[in-house]
Amino acid sequence: MNIAIWHNLPSGGASRALHQHIKGLAERGHQLTVYTTSMADSDYLDVNQYAGAPKVVPLDMTIRIRHQYRDRLRSIAYLPDTQVERMLDACRQSAAQIEAGGHDVLFANSCQTFMMPYIGRFVKLPKVLYLGEPNRSLFEAFPTQRWSALPPASGRWQDATYRQAFWRDLFEQRQARVRVREELLNYESFDKVLVNSYFTNESVVRAYGADHQGGTQRCEVCYLGIDTHLFPFQDLPRQPFVLGLGAFFPHKRPDTAIRALAQLPAERRPPLIWVGNMGNSLYVNEVIQLSQQLGVDFQPRERVTQDELTHLLNTATCLLYTSELEPFGFAPLEANACGLPVVAVAEGGIRETVIDGQNGLLFPRDPAQLAAGVHRLLHDSALHQRLSEQGRAMVADKWDTTSAIDRLENALLRVGVGQSMVHA
Image (tube, rainbow, N blue to C red):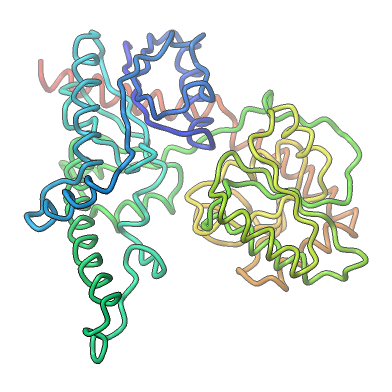
């Protein structure tokens, strides 16, 4: 097939997944062209050898004060805000390029700003979307963020700060309702939506509804695979440190990992090396302060090389994975490929990739229980060896890249060929 691929991804797990998909499809003889924006991290994705240089359209999401005031006025009439308008314009430009490319199918991927991409509205080809997760800030509570409630107005209306917060909240909630409306339109524009786990499938149903087309659900689980050439088992001596992986943002919860290690005796407390590809510098400082208060040797490392990451996965004693409601989570399986057992919070898609007692240990989000799991892996060599061997076998048996590309290719063929027959 001649496949158009669209994405607006930063560096990280979603880009690694797309790289795997592009490489696998190209090796099977499909012709691929990548379309993206200037915001995307195309250098990190690095697929020129498989799909040629990407076709990039300009996109700037920087919002200034004048845009904020304009967006407040537009929100009163439930009109799209500046960022939505800019994305719509960028997608129109990409769609014109795609329509002129002679493609059989569009394979769209997530958007770092909105998650649910807008490109599907403007492309008339058969369309498949690989969605990492819905826009959680729109569809989940996030009580300290978008949907936080103001205190009761009684006795506060004379306070100028309260009045400002009231009106700002009113505008923001209207803007959010517009974005929800736009996201639903985007979701409905795709013929098939592929997701990375059954947990994500349920999140999509909660966010966008259980939409069925002719008795077939629009959303379908398409598990990813792990490239064991990229994450090899090197059989190196294990060192007494704990590894954490995830961008430096609150929902990755490095604070949970720090609080867990703080439960261990100070004289036997391992360092926590945390690797993240990007992050919020203010939040990183908060986490460092927390680690200092609790006496945990926290070592943040940003954007390490692949060789360094592989070395860390082959020399750590365990991966402590504390991400909040992670939709899939590459890191535990990449760790398993390198023979590294996982101690993880039993939330989200992690419950599909980490099987308690087989390739890792699962616990509630309780620092004391997580600490007990880390302690076991640090001091029980027989348990560590068993989980290491079983984890490597599980990756080879269930999470191989060949099967992952089979699943994606079959979905693209079903949509591409099926829609072509419908329109013939």
